[in-house]
Length: 260
Image (cartoon, rainbow, N blue to C red; front, top):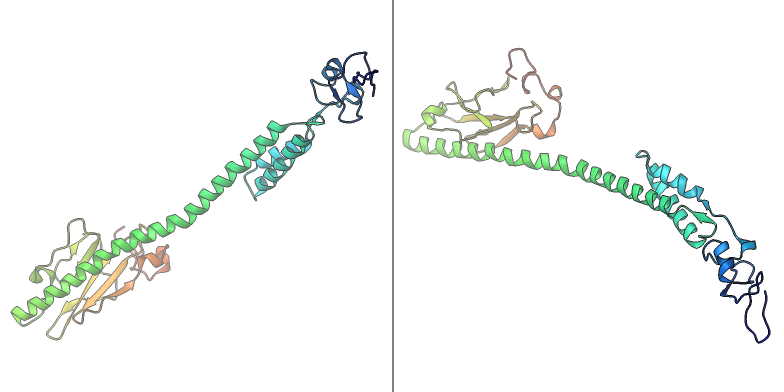
Protein backbone atom coordinates (compact mmCIF):
# COMPACT_ATOMS: atom_id res chain seq x y z
CA UNK A 1 0.00 0.00 0.00
CA UNK A 2 1.04 3.57 -0.50
CA UNK A 3 -0.60 6.68 0.71
CA UNK A 4 0.69 10.23 0.08
CA UNK A 5 0.56 13.05 2.60
CA UNK A 6 -2.87 14.54 2.77
CA UNK A 7 -4.48 11.11 2.61
CA UNK A 8 -4.51 10.70 -1.16
CA UNK A 9 -4.13 7.04 -2.16
CA UNK A 10 -1.18 6.45 -4.45
CA UNK A 11 -0.31 3.38 -6.49
CA UNK A 12 2.06 0.97 -4.74
CA UNK A 13 4.13 0.55 -7.91
CA UNK A 14 3.99 4.01 -9.51
CA UNK A 15 3.78 7.56 -8.26
CA UNK A 16 0.25 7.89 -9.59
CA UNK A 17 -3.16 8.31 -8.11
CA UNK A 18 -4.75 4.99 -7.17
CA UNK A 19 -8.14 4.01 -8.58
CA UNK A 20 -8.70 0.86 -6.53
CA UNK A 21 -7.11 -1.85 -4.46
CA UNK A 22 -5.88 -5.31 -5.38
CA UNK A 23 -8.50 -7.86 -4.41
CA UNK A 24 -5.76 -10.22 -3.32
CA UNK A 25 -3.09 -8.24 -1.45
CA UNK A 26 -4.97 -5.01 -0.80
CA UNK A 27 -2.38 -2.61 -2.28
CA UNK A 28 -3.48 0.44 -4.19
CA UNK A 29 -3.37 0.24 -7.96
CA UNK A 30 -3.42 2.88 -10.66
CA UNK A 31 -5.20 2.55 -14.03
CA UNK A 32 -1.96 1.39 -15.74
CA UNK A 33 -1.41 -1.36 -13.20
CA UNK A 34 -4.99 -2.54 -13.45
CA UNK A 35 -4.59 -2.68 -17.22
CA UNK A 36 -1.44 -4.75 -16.88
CA UNK A 37 -3.25 -7.06 -14.48
CA UNK A 38 -5.83 -7.95 -17.08
CA UNK A 39 -8.15 -5.13 -17.98
CA UNK A 40 -9.49 -4.20 -14.57
CA UNK A 41 -9.66 -7.66 -13.13
CA UNK A 42 -9.28 -6.31 -9.60
CA UNK A 43 -5.65 -7.38 -8.94
CA UNK A 44 -2.28 -5.69 -9.12
CA UNK A 45 0.41 -6.89 -11.60
CA UNK A 46 2.22 -8.78 -8.83
CA UNK A 47 -0.92 -10.75 -8.01
CA UNK A 48 -2.02 -11.15 -11.59
CA UNK A 49 -3.41 -14.62 -12.32
CA UNK A 50 -3.52 -16.04 -15.83
CA UNK A 51 -7.01 -17.57 -16.05
CA UNK A 52 -7.35 -21.11 -17.32
CA UNK A 53 -10.25 -22.93 -18.89
CA UNK A 54 -12.30 -24.80 -16.33
CA UNK A 55 -11.67 -28.53 -16.68
CA UNK A 56 -15.01 -29.10 -14.95
CA UNK A 57 -16.76 -27.20 -17.75
CA UNK A 58 -14.96 -29.26 -20.40
CA UNK A 59 -15.87 -32.57 -18.74
CA UNK A 60 -19.44 -31.34 -18.31
CA UNK A 61 -19.96 -30.47 -21.98
CA UNK A 62 -18.43 -33.79 -23.10
CA UNK A 63 -20.69 -35.83 -20.83
CA UNK A 64 -23.71 -33.71 -21.76
CA UNK A 65 -23.20 -34.72 -25.40
CA UNK A 66 -23.57 -38.47 -24.60
CA UNK A 67 -27.28 -39.43 -24.94
CA UNK A 68 -27.23 -42.73 -23.08
CA UNK A 69 -27.59 -44.12 -19.57
CA UNK A 70 -28.50 -40.65 -18.25
CA UNK A 71 -24.84 -39.61 -18.57
CA UNK A 72 -26.02 -36.28 -19.95
CA UNK A 73 -27.64 -35.52 -16.58
CA UNK A 74 -24.27 -35.90 -14.87
CA UNK A 75 -22.77 -33.66 -17.55
CA UNK A 76 -25.48 -31.08 -17.00
CA UNK A 77 -24.83 -31.07 -13.26
CA UNK A 78 -21.08 -30.61 -13.78
CA UNK A 79 -21.73 -27.81 -16.26
CA UNK A 80 -23.90 -25.97 -13.73
CA UNK A 81 -21.24 -26.37 -11.04
CA UNK A 82 -18.56 -25.14 -13.46
CA UNK A 83 -20.64 -22.12 -14.45
CA UNK A 84 -20.93 -20.89 -10.87
CA UNK A 85 -17.26 -21.56 -10.11
CA UNK A 86 -16.24 -19.47 -13.11
CA UNK A 87 -18.72 -16.77 -12.15
CA UNK A 88 -17.31 -16.61 -8.61
CA UNK A 89 -13.67 -16.53 -9.70
CA UNK A 90 -13.47 -14.98 -13.18
CA UNK A 91 -9.83 -13.96 -12.69
CA UNK A 92 -8.71 -17.58 -12.35
CA UNK A 93 -11.16 -19.47 -14.54
CA UNK A 94 -12.60 -19.12 -18.04
CA UNK A 95 -14.96 -21.34 -20.00
CA UNK A 96 -18.34 -19.91 -19.07
CA UNK A 97 -19.51 -20.45 -22.67
CA UNK A 98 -18.43 -24.11 -22.49
CA UNK A 99 -20.39 -24.55 -19.27
CA UNK A 100 -23.45 -22.94 -20.85
CA UNK A 101 -23.13 -25.25 -23.87
CA UNK A 102 -23.09 -28.25 -21.52
CA UNK A 103 -26.23 -27.04 -19.77
CA UNK A 104 -27.98 -26.51 -23.11
CA UNK A 105 -27.04 -29.99 -24.36
CA UNK A 106 -28.26 -31.59 -21.14
CA UNK A 107 -31.51 -29.63 -21.44
CA UNK A 108 -32.00 -30.81 -25.04
CA UNK A 109 -31.47 -34.47 -24.15
CA UNK A 110 -33.79 -34.13 -21.16
CA UNK A 111 -36.50 -32.69 -23.41
CA UNK A 112 -35.99 -35.44 -26.00
CA UNK A 113 -36.17 -38.10 -23.29
CA UNK A 114 -39.31 -36.51 -21.89
CA UNK A 115 -40.96 -36.54 -25.30
CA UNK A 116 -39.98 -40.18 -25.73
CA UNK A 117 -41.49 -41.16 -22.38
CA UNK A 118 -44.71 -39.29 -23.14
CA UNK A 119 -44.89 -40.93 -26.58
CA UNK A 120 -44.27 -44.39 -25.11
CA UNK A 121 -47.22 -43.89 -22.79
CA UNK A 122 -49.54 -41.97 -25.10
CA UNK A 123 -49.19 -43.93 -28.37
CA UNK A 124 -50.30 -47.35 -27.01
CA UNK A 125 -53.19 -45.66 -25.20
CA UNK A 126 -54.17 -43.85 -28.39
CA UNK A 127 -54.03 -47.08 -30.40
CA UNK A 128 -56.18 -48.78 -27.76
CA UNK A 129 -58.64 -45.87 -27.82
CA UNK A 130 -58.87 -46.12 -31.62
CA UNK A 131 -59.44 -49.86 -31.37
CA UNK A 132 -62.22 -49.39 -28.82
CA UNK A 133 -63.93 -46.89 -31.11
CA UNK A 134 -63.74 -49.38 -33.98
CA UNK A 135 -65.20 -52.14 -31.80
CA UNK A 136 -68.23 -49.94 -31.23
CA UNK A 137 -69.30 -50.80 -34.77
CA UNK A 138 -69.60 -54.51 -34.00
CA UNK A 139 -71.59 -53.88 -30.83
CA UNK A 140 -73.91 -51.42 -32.54
CA UNK A 141 -74.54 -53.57 -35.61
CA UNK A 142 -75.07 -56.82 -33.71
CA UNK A 143 -77.57 -55.04 -31.46
CA UNK A 144 -79.35 -53.80 -34.59
CA UNK A 145 -79.32 -57.34 -35.98
CA UNK A 146 -81.01 -58.57 -32.78
CA UNK A 147 -83.73 -55.92 -33.19
CA UNK A 148 -84.28 -57.04 -36.79
CA UNK A 149 -84.55 -60.67 -35.64
CA UNK A 150 -87.17 -59.75 -33.06
CA UNK A 151 -89.12 -57.81 -35.66
CA UNK A 152 -88.86 -60.75 -38.10
CA UNK A 153 -90.16 -63.17 -35.48
CA UNK A 154 -93.07 -60.88 -34.67
CA UNK A 155 -94.08 -60.67 -38.32
CA UNK A 156 -93.10 -64.13 -39.61
CA UNK A 157 -93.36 -66.26 -36.48
CA UNK A 158 -89.76 -67.46 -36.82
CA UNK A 159 -86.20 -66.19 -36.79
CA UNK A 160 -84.44 -65.45 -40.08
CA UNK A 161 -81.86 -68.06 -41.04
CA UNK A 162 -79.54 -65.73 -42.95
CA UNK A 163 -78.75 -62.06 -43.34
CA UNK A 164 -80.47 -61.76 -46.72
CA UNK A 165 -83.80 -63.00 -45.33
CA UNK A 166 -83.39 -60.64 -42.41
CA UNK A 167 -82.65 -57.66 -44.65
CA UNK A 168 -79.44 -56.88 -42.76
CA UNK A 169 -76.72 -54.92 -44.55
CA UNK A 170 -73.40 -53.80 -43.12
CA UNK A 171 -72.86 -50.04 -42.82
CA UNK A 172 -70.82 -48.13 -45.40
CA UNK A 173 -67.11 -48.41 -44.60
CA UNK A 174 -67.67 -51.43 -42.35
CA UNK A 175 -64.64 -52.84 -40.55
CA UNK A 176 -66.32 -56.15 -39.69
CA UNK A 177 -67.85 -59.09 -41.53
CA UNK A 178 -71.20 -60.32 -40.19
CA UNK A 179 -72.26 -63.96 -40.26
CA UNK A 180 -75.66 -65.64 -39.81
CA UNK A 181 -76.39 -69.12 -41.12
CA UNK A 182 -75.35 -70.44 -44.53
CA UNK A 183 -76.06 -67.26 -46.46
CA UNK A 184 -73.43 -64.84 -47.66
CA UNK A 185 -71.84 -62.66 -44.96
CA UNK A 186 -72.14 -58.88 -45.00
CA UNK A 187 -69.34 -56.36 -44.61
CA UNK A 188 -65.61 -56.88 -45.17
CA UNK A 189 -65.31 -59.58 -47.85
CA UNK A 190 -61.91 -61.11 -46.97
CA UNK A 191 -62.76 -61.91 -43.35
CA UNK A 192 -64.02 -65.35 -42.43
CA UNK A 193 -65.76 -67.20 -39.60
CA UNK A 194 -63.06 -68.61 -37.26
CA UNK A 195 -62.95 -72.39 -36.87
CA UNK A 196 -65.20 -73.84 -34.18
CA UNK A 197 -67.91 -71.18 -34.50
CA UNK A 198 -71.38 -71.94 -35.87
CA UNK A 199 -74.05 -69.39 -36.70
CA UNK A 200 -77.66 -69.84 -37.73
CA UNK A 201 -81.24 -69.88 -36.48
CA UNK A 202 -84.03 -72.32 -35.60
CA UNK A 203 -87.38 -72.11 -33.86
CA UNK A 204 -85.77 -71.73 -30.46
CA UNK A 205 -83.09 -69.14 -31.10
CA UNK A 206 -80.25 -67.88 -33.23
CA UNK A 207 -76.55 -66.96 -33.09
CA UNK A 208 -74.75 -64.30 -35.17
CA UNK A 209 -71.08 -63.34 -35.23
CA UNK A 210 -69.09 -60.26 -36.22
CA UNK A 211 -65.42 -60.66 -37.21
CA UNK A 212 -63.01 -57.75 -37.63
CA UNK A 213 -59.34 -56.77 -37.37
CA UNK A 214 -58.99 -53.44 -35.61
CA UNK A 215 -55.30 -52.75 -34.97
CA UNK A 216 -53.36 -54.19 -37.94
CA UNK A 217 -51.77 -57.10 -36.07
CA UNK A 218 -53.73 -59.80 -38.01
CA UNK A 219 -55.46 -61.04 -34.84
CA UNK A 220 -59.22 -61.27 -35.34
CA UNK A 221 -61.66 -59.37 -33.16
CA UNK A 222 -64.68 -61.66 -32.70
CA UNK A 223 -68.09 -60.80 -31.23
CA UNK A 224 -71.15 -63.01 -30.80
CA UNK A 225 -74.80 -62.29 -30.01
CA UNK A 226 -77.83 -64.57 -29.54
CA UNK A 227 -81.59 -64.35 -29.16
CA UNK A 228 -81.18 -63.34 -25.50
CA UNK A 229 -79.23 -60.28 -26.58
CA UNK A 230 -76.10 -61.58 -24.85
CA UNK A 231 -73.21 -59.77 -26.55
CA UNK A 232 -69.85 -61.46 -25.96
CA UNK A 233 -66.36 -60.54 -27.14
CA UNK A 234 -65.10 -64.06 -27.89
CA UNK A 235 -61.64 -62.74 -28.77
CA UNK A 236 -60.46 -59.22 -28.06
CA UNK A 237 -58.01 -58.15 -30.76
CA UNK A 238 -56.69 -55.41 -28.46
CA UNK A 239 -55.52 -58.00 -25.90
CA UNK A 240 -53.03 -59.54 -28.37
CA UNK A 241 -50.16 -58.22 -30.47
CA UNK A 242 -48.88 -61.44 -32.06
CA UNK A 243 -51.07 -63.61 -34.31
CA UNK A 244 -49.36 -66.72 -32.97
CA UNK A 245 -50.60 -65.98 -29.47
CA UNK A 246 -54.09 -67.11 -30.47
CA UNK A 247 -55.54 -70.37 -31.74
CA UNK A 248 -54.89 -71.30 -35.36
CA UNK A 249 -57.45 -69.71 -37.63
CA UNK A 250 -58.27 -66.94 -35.15
CA UNK A 251 -55.73 -64.67 -36.83
CA UNK A 252 -55.25 -63.93 -40.50
CA UNK A 253 -52.65 -66.14 -42.14
CA UNK A 254 -52.26 -68.64 -39.30
CA UNK A 255 -53.73 -71.66 -41.10
CA UNK A 256 -53.23 -72.86 -44.68
CA UNK A 257 -55.59 -71.14 -47.07
CA UNK A 258 -56.45 -68.26 -44.76
CA UNK A 259 -56.49 -64.91 -46.56
CA UNK A 260 -53.85 -62.39 -45.52
